[in-house]
Image (cartoon, rainbow, N blue to C red; front, side, top):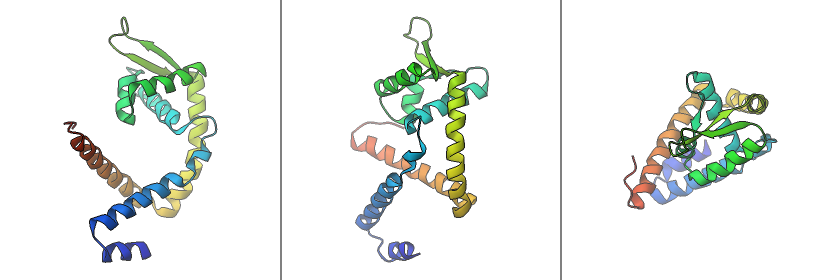
Length: 165
């Protein structure tokens, strides 16, 4: 509660932005990465996207462009990450037509097993966190974080002079 009272008393933009920066730093500093033994956080996100596509049925493929857009990183970085996942046998990487129509991945059975194993570890950790924090509050926090990140993304693009919606 000390933080809330402090923010209520000091509502200037500089102090709020400093506090927000500090909180993001602390969230990133919490060593959740130690729960990722065999996959990186980025690899896990890619694998989840591939699994979601598989579960949706008709089209089990995820295009690299879509991954890059969702993760907000360049396609060449996604390509590097996919190459490692492919070499480990966790995804298959192929293309439509001659490749000019896009390259995509599908998750392999080994990838499904790895994702399930990683998911269990995260379920145990975040299950305890959500239990202590409260599920409704956690959902609300995620919604608010998404809103703030969307506004921040648009502001970054507008500062660069790009019109990205």
